[in-house]
Image (cartoon, rainbow, N blue to C red; front, top):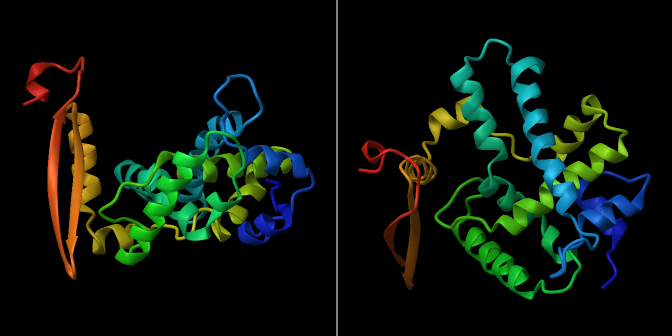
Length: 223
């Protein structure tokens, strides 16, 4: 499947000088290692998005925020679940090419449907597939490289689409995220949580399943 470069550029509101970068950013990793895919760009994008958001909240507009608030804002804006929802909302996964991709696309389609039923863009019951977050990170890195590694130019481009909506401190204070906080707490205590939802008409029943993961944490933190 050929990637519709022009269409993707319209979606992300950025026109590439080097179209090959966008093509690489939308190429799913094959079964064999070493073949071209978005993995290298995704590695860079993870760091780039974190730095762009950190710089924005630290310096551009919010120089008086506490370290704790800065950490909360960075986490809220760059976590995999938020980025996955952005990718699903923009429909970016429809433009990914590669072999052995059918399972990832199926997960993405299911997640997008559930997300739209919830009508929650930022957070929700369902945890976003990492595949979707990887797409956002790889495209962000491709833009960064295309800009000749100019971080000053990068953030305004990301803010327009790939990081939208930017979650503010006011949003966090007015919209508690108990599910996200529960995930983070379980991770710290070496436990894995899965939320299973069953729908019966307009009624939804949720069940929490906890699994103890193998961990090097001391016993006091695992209780």
